[in-house]
Structures are given as C-alpha cells and as structure tokens.
Amino acid sequence: MQIQYNFAFFDEGSKREIRRATLKAIAIPGYQVPFASREMPIGRGWGTGGLQLTLSLIGKTDVLKIIDQGSDESVNAVSIKKLIHKTTGVEAVDETDRATLIQSRHRIPEIPLKQGQILVLQVPMPEPLRMYESSELETKRLHGEKDYSGAWLMLFEQIMKYRSVSTGADHPVMVHDRYVMAPSPIPKFDNPKMNFSEALILLGAGREKKIYAVPPYTKVVSMAFEDVPFEPETFPNQSCRQCGARDVFMDELFDPATAAVYYQCNDTSYCLTRMNQQSS
Image (cartoon, rainbow, N blue to C red; front, side):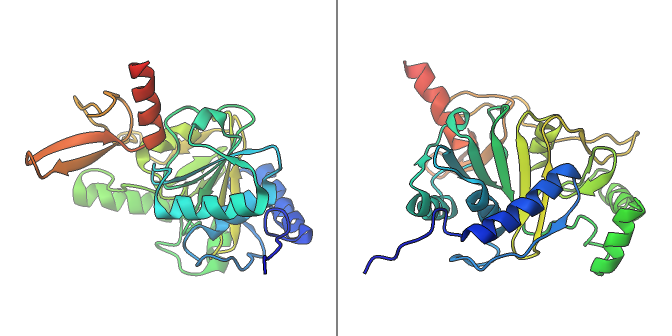
C-alpha cells in the first residue's frame, strides 16, 4: 500500500503557523521567534529546524539544493533531498545559481547568492548567550536590554588565553546593530557573506523550537574588538588540487600514497563547476 503525503509533508495549518513565525523573524532581524516544532521523520539534531522551514516555504516551481558541510552528496544531504523530492516532486540540483531554495548545514555556498534566492541554515544551538547563561528567561532579558557584556567577556577571555579569538565556527554576529545572533556553525570564513546579502537567510532550530532571519541587504557584523579585529580563516599560498581555486574555504586532506598534505574546495559543487568550465 502506497502512503499518500500532503504536498511538502506538512498539513496546511502547520505550514501557515511556521510561515507566520518566519514573517515575524524577517520583520525583526536576528530575533529568535519561538514556534511549535513538529515531529519529523528524522531525528532531532539532524536538521529538523531547517527542514521544517524548507517544507513550509517550498512551492511547485521551486528548484532545490541541499548541502551538508559543503557536500551535495553526504548522507544527511541525500536523505533530506529524498524526503523533500518524494513529498513535492520539485527539481533538485547541485548548481547554486540555479536553485531558488537552498538548505545547508554548516556552510554558505561559495558562489554569491542573489536576489530571489532563500538560504535555510540548520541550527543546533540558536542562543548565542547560552555558553554563559543557562536560563532562557535571563537570556531573553539580556537580549531585551541589549546587554551583551557576557559575550564580549567570552571573546576577551579567549584573547587572554590564546592571544587571539579561538572560535572556529558559529562566531557570534551583531545583526542590524541590535541583536547578537548565532550564525549556525558555519566557519568564520562564511560570516562576511551574511553582510548585506542579496538573498534571504533563514535559520531554524527544531530541537530548540526557534526561527530567526537575516533579511536581504541587512547589516551583519562579526563581534570583535577594535584593537583585535575579526579574522576569518585564510589559506595563504594554497590552491585547490582539483580546480586550482584560491580565496575559498578549503579542506586540508592527507594523501597516504604520497604522505603529503593537500587542499581541496570544501564546496564540492563550486569545485566541479570550475573543473567543467576548465575542460570545456
């Protein structure tokens, strides 16, 4: 017996509720909007927040792209892609510039996003103040009063201990000069891509039941001190072994055959596109 699903899995009432929370999040950039997180056919912590956003927004004419840490073919990306395609029938692609709706875990694509595109980021921990404040009531008060002294103190302690800010990913950002926001565990290299992005960026945390957003052309600045500026990852004098790209986020890999370290584009679609352009 074949199971019949509603378009995009959810009932229409659930979609409307999630859309209402999304609209509020867009209206207040960086603010975490609570929502009634639904039960999903995947485990919490595997992208349920991002998936709920995607399923509530996707339409029959959309073109879908799913990324997991830069890869279009990882287990997480393929499983989510199959679920969405099975319940919607929409076209799924690897090319960033063709997609209208992009769901990603831990990366923002290398190709700059453009107007009309929506980027959905999966978020495990949406509260940037949770590392030093366990009370949800207290973090709400701190956000309301714009009291981010604890976040500044955490960065200061890292500088005192390591002589630099040691955040490798999920480095907090200030949105629209108002709310400190967790950008999801994207590498610091991707933080500047959020600043005045042409695309709408939505962030969903299913387990924590929060949605927040960065509307197009919104100011997003990574938290840093004037005398210790924000420094994203760099790969000086390195290029991708496959396509030769520079100034992109790369993986450092080890070749056991030659016992040598080499670098490769983390964004597999970007790398493949460059290779195809070079061969044509």
